[in-house]
Length: 324
Image (cartoon, rainbow, N blue to C red; front, top):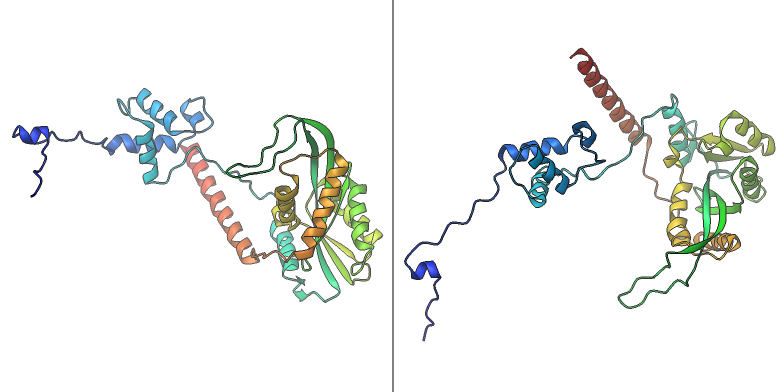
């Protein structure tokens, strides 16, 4: 026997169901909120560093753009154009007039060439830099190991045990790291690292060993180039362009060490920091493979072309604003 169909109150009374209230219509209000989201808050007089959906909704009502609008509605409007004004990315213009030739030298070395000539088997490429101020933070309570449905727990309070600088040299082709800790950075600590590497084979008897470094104070300028050549005639220093330490492959290794060794920071003293870093070098070198570096001179030219276009467009906008 079929069950009777249950009907709503309106149907039983013979009346059609009441229509649902219309959703908030996008229209001009949505367009104005999007335009507002594409402005810096400081340009509008709002004391904010960036917009959030609740703040945009509040500003829209204060300006009379909409009598009432929720943060979720604003979020839906912004999502239509993938606008996320609460996010930001940093950038910097190229200031080094020799940016391209310097960057090309580094990229060519990663491709194992120098002045368009392939490097020989007795020529090596070293990427070197310093990681400053690695602190020894001794937690006031022991760190708890992870368990079922529980992350590792690290006590928030700690005692300071000082800081140490970590210097590392990375053999680009052989994927081998040589590191050391020093009380601070400087010319002497950097030369200690160079001596540590250049006094061992295969580097001591190599035809040439190229040292890629950034423009930090420990190895900046022609004096450093001359100092390195005087100490080790087969060593050639190659500087990355200014503000382009991202071209230095050793930075990749530093990021690995940061994730796997330094964080979370829980060391009893500086000696333990150094011991842990050196032990990690041995562990890393046992299985390391060269980084799959894919950034080429073609990518460099594309980047510089985009920067040129951006600079030209910005100049035209500035000129138009002055003329107005």
